[in-house]
Image 1 (cartoon, rainbow, N blue to C red):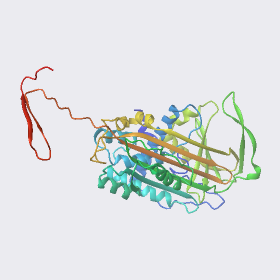
Image 2 (cartoon, one colour):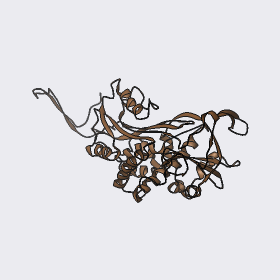
Image 3 (spheres, rainbow, N blue to C red):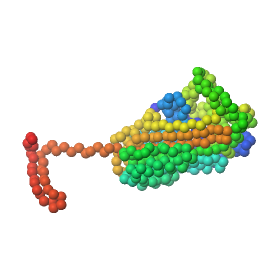
Image 4 (spheres, rainbow, N blue to C red):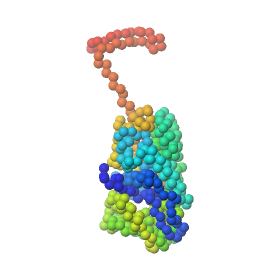
Length: 412
C-alpha cells in the first residue's frame, strides 16, 4: 500500500473542506460551526480514502471523463463496515483510512457530518440518504440494523427479492433521493444469491454565488491533447473578486462558491508540461493545505466549459487494491456482525454519478450500492469409513423393517 495513502486529502468539489470566498453577491464569512477534532479526523479519513479511490479509478479507466462521489462510497461502505469482523474488518479499516478511530467514533461522526452537510447552507440543496434492503428470507442482527439506523439515518426494509417489483422498489428510492438522476443502480431480476443491498444516495443542487452571464457564453476550442481539439460552450464570469486563485508548482487552483459561500468548486488546472493524472496522484495534505491557505481574491475574467456527464463503474477491483480484497472473497469474508445465517461476502460495489455545470450553477447526484451475497455453504463432509449398523424403517410408526451391521462391506 502506498505510504502516501494516510496523508492525502481529496479535493471534493462542494462536499469536502469548505473554501470561503468573500465577495459581492451575498457570500458569508464564517461557517455554521467549526468541526470537532473527531469530525475533522473522520473527514480527513474519508478524504484520504477518496483521493486513493479517485487515483485508483483513474488508473483503471481508459482515460475518458470520470466523476465519482467519494462521500457516497465512503458512507455505503461505512455501513457495511459495521457488520465486518476479523481480517475483513481490518481490510476495510485500511481501505477506508479509518486509522485509530474507534467504531463508535466513526459512527458518531458520520452522523454529525451528515447533519452538518445537509444543514450547511439554506441556499443549497444538499441531500444525503442511506438505506438497507434485505431479503425477507434472510436474518439480520438487530444490533447491525439499529447501528445503521441511528448513525446513518438508514431506512431499513425487507423485500421479497424474488418478486419482479423488488429491484424497481429499490431503484425508485434511489431515484427519489437523487433528483431523478440515478434510476437503475440495482439490476432486474435480483441475483438469487444476493441477500442485501446497502445503498447511499447523494444529491447536490446550487446556484453559483454569482452566476455566469448566459448571454456571454460562446463557442471555444478545447484542447483535449496535442492532436485533438473540440468545440465547447465556454461560460464567462467577470468575477470582481469572486474567483480565488493560487499558483502551485504543478498546477493553478481556482475556487468559485455556491449559495451563501459555504460550498465551493475548486478547479485544479495543471501547468502546460504536467499531466492531469500526475496532479491527481501527487496531491498530499501539505499541497492541498497550502493551496487553500494561498487562495486570494482575484479580479479576473474567468472562463470554463459548460458540461454535463454521467459515469458508472464497478469498484470491486479498485477497492481490492486499496486493501479490502478479503471482503470480496467468498468463503473468506467475515460479516459475522451482520447476520447469523451464512457466509456473507460483498459481490459488487456499484457506483453511478451524474453532474451538470452551467451558467446558473451545479446539479450533481451519485449513488453507491454495496451488494451482499450469501456464499454457498460448504457441505459438512461425513465419511462412513468404519463398521456401521443400518436400519430400514418408516418414520410414522418407527417400525424396524430391516436392520443390518456392516463390518466388511462386500463388493457389489
